[in-house]
Image (cartoon, rainbow, N blue to C red; front, side, top):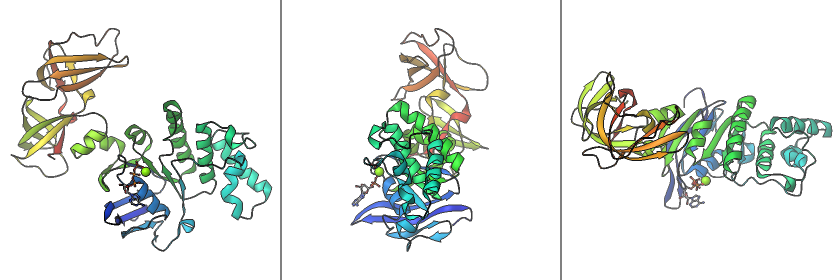
Length: 365
Ligand SMILES: Nc1ncnc2c1ncn2[C@@H]1O[C@H](COP(=O)(O)OP(=O)(O)OP(=O)(O)O)[C@@H](O)[C@H]1O
Ligand SMILES: [Mg+2]
């Protein structure tokens, strides 16, 4: 286990009968980090969180928190607190008693309890709400109360299982910002579960992308978006254009590939070794491609195609461009800056161009 890891998940497997829900997962999470588990339904996110909380035990492997192995430590003795997806707060208690609920076992004076609750109400931007009944709150307010109830115990780790899942888009975005600010203020380590890639990118210091119980890639939001290692990760995070290719030469930090429809182009050299003749895929994000009516000059790479489809979306426009020898049309996305830009007729010849730094080389899968 690395020395600065606050939570260390070491080679953890979890079986439910014969079904393997978690497959050899190893993750180190730093102190004060906002760490997210991202993956589609059923990939094992909740199972991993429940093992951190102690509600499930690993079938093999070990979990350390703050340097201590957790295998013999029951949930209530762990320095963690969990906020569940269904944000259960007690409907018969008012806001103050909901937030103070976890304090009841500590021998605190009423004045001290009230002081701590008031601090929390300030923190979640609901000052003066102490006497409100729980059923007189909006969904977002209830969610914040559930967070306050977990935070007041000052856990070293807060486990959040899709805590914003039930909120509408606007409230969700507002709560994302508040959650991030809150985490920075209190300096608690957050392990956050979501299947929403945008949410994970916005909030996290680092993200583990999971699929079928395994971690596909563990990286920063920029790393995942700019340098996905596999096609699965690349297509899970945002939109991506994929092209089959063959490695023609390795040239410093770049790799020259031959790709039908694109010709000989350059891609960034991945961490893993590649050699001439390897069958690979190259990928380019739609917003990294420029679309023009004439052949661009200068150092960028370019190819001619036919504009098949254009969609004006206000802030952006989306284009689909057909290339000879490529099955899927290429998606291009560009920001509409000047008035009237993006109004381009369809079925006409256009030039696509891009910077080699934007081309990612993936393992063929
Ligand atoms: N107690 C259990 N017994 C048997 N199988 C289980 C149990 N708990 C979870 N599973 C299975 O393990 C897999 C992972 O479940 P988990 O709840 O961790 O998924 P998840 O990533 O949280 O999905 P979601 O996004 O839908 O919440 C699923 O296939 C699920 O059916
Ligand atoms: Mg879940």
